[in-house]
Image (cartoon, rainbow, N blue to C red; front, side, top):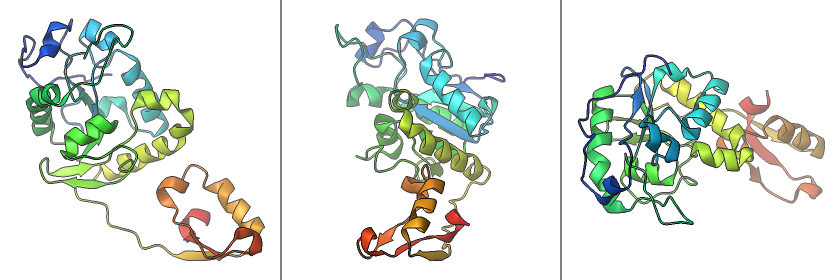
Length: 246
């Protein structure tokens, strides 16, 4: 990461919750203070705790790899996390999810970073991060890739899967890269993206269907609305956004 800067939070000696007793370092956000995209991870792992640097470790490495595929410069983003201290647990677990009190204790630090940077888009990565940013009970599965307006932060929110989930589930990478490409485009303007009505095409043969599926494998969960009116083997009709297949 070049042009790396941090928001001055003066929290190196923070003792707002019990996580302070197990940490080696407080891990705050780093990146461009002019970033249009602000990524929010969940908690620091052992590598980040050891160095105090959020950009050192498998989370940042995996994220930056995917940013490259989506043509987003890692120099132009800001990466931070929901909590600032590693949530240690006794062996064999070693690391656990932080509880609500610990998340709330770190909340002012994330708020100050967002206020200082004023991004066009906040990208929470994982369920814990999206719950914190949206301040309601949601999951990453039902919000992933969805553009949501945040009144609290006065900007857009587009959640994605956590980078370490992508490492465990490589089949998620394709649509996560597509989410990041949409985020790159959407970050160029502050308002919500207008909904596109689209045009449609009727698919009536099995050959057309297989051709379509080949072209939209990684798009189908995010961009394609399929309406089946009868069984495919009986020459079903499928109504689909024409822009995907033209």
